[in-house]
Amino acid sequence: MEILVLGDTIMRIIKKFICYFLIISSVLLLSGCSNNKEEELLKSKLTSEMQYFDKTIAKMLNDANGIKFQNYQISREKIEEKQESETTNNKEGQDSGSSNKSSSSSGDESSNGSSNSSSEDQSKKNDYQYKMVQNSILVKEKTPDWDSLTSQVETLYSDWAIVTLDLYKQNIDNQKILAFNTDLDAVTKAIKNKDKAQTLVLLAKLYSYIPTYYLGFSTDQMQTNLYKVKSGVLNAYSLIEQNKVDEVKKQLLFAEEAMIAMINNMGEKNQKEYNLNKAYILLKDLQNTIDKNDADIFYLKYKNLMEELNVL
Image 1 (cartoon, rainbow, N blue to C red):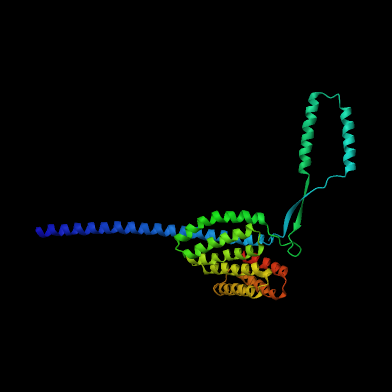
Image 2 (image 1 turned 90 degrees about the vertical axis):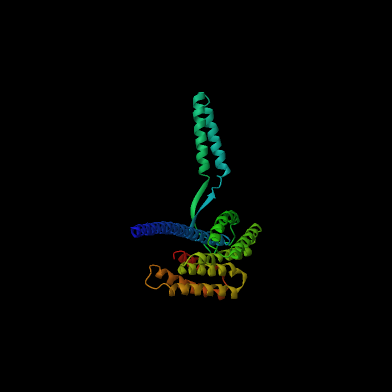
């Protein structure tokens, strides 16, 4: 009898142990799933943030040279005033008409006043004419859009404050994060001083942090290498007018190595294979322009290459 009681007790203990084990396992499993979900959400957020910085910094580099990727833009021009003789004739006609209408009622005057006000508003709207103007690299002055750059760099500060926290959560090297802060301050100072050469170089340096950060939280080698390609091209672009031929060649060689890695890692047929091969040809063509010592030709081919890279 005692043996049976002891056996039941042991079974109850075993069942309780199993229940506790299942509960603890479930809690740990759910906790692990929750942590994994938060980790994936953070990585997705950082991916979007890197894409934003990619577009923003590249645009700032183009604005620093007044280069636009759109082939055409809308131009607004103020219409010249009519000749003084025509204005005089019109005024005489209005004076004649006013004398003929001197007997009109006050209600009519109010109506006429409203009509004249409407005409004046319409006239103001017609003070400008709009037309499509081609964005030509060859004839356009490479003047920085300082107003746009000032606005964008201020926005970059507030955006970077958010990204910094996300990078810290991914255990990215603190020194690399702090280095971006230092260079962002330097870019702001260059823009404030309207120093075009320094603005270009420092913006390109800011962009070079993107592949480093991206590699710290993502295993997507194709995207990492794409950022490296763009970084090399943008660094070369920032130096082309400073007569640093060897450094420009070095940066484009860095871009080529990253692009070759992309081609080799593509593996099976990919829908972007055509664009990647085309981009490689454009990159080689860009390299061939360096010794020609013509920045405008470089900018033309740079624009074509960057448009293709943005498709990838």
